[in-house]
Length: 68
Image 1 (cartoon, rainbow, N blue to C red):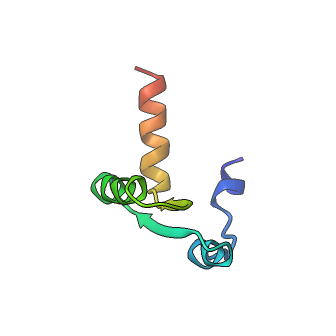
Image 2: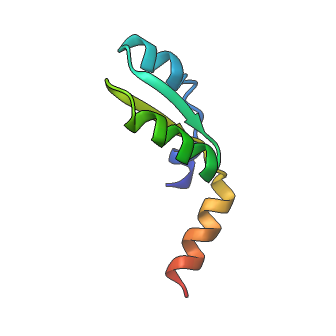
C-alpha cells in the first residue's frame, strides 16, 4: 500500500489547478499552511492548497500517535 502512495504521478498540481481556474498555493510546513489557509479564507473563488509532507516523518508520527 505504501508504494501506491509514494509512486510518482508526474502530475503538476499547480498546472491542474490552472486548468480549472482554481487559486493555487503550496504549503511545506505548518506556518506556510496557516498563511495559505488565511489567504484562501479571505479570497473568493475556489482555493486549492497543496500540502507537501515528508513521507517518512508522517509515517513515524502516525505510528507514534496510534501506539502511545
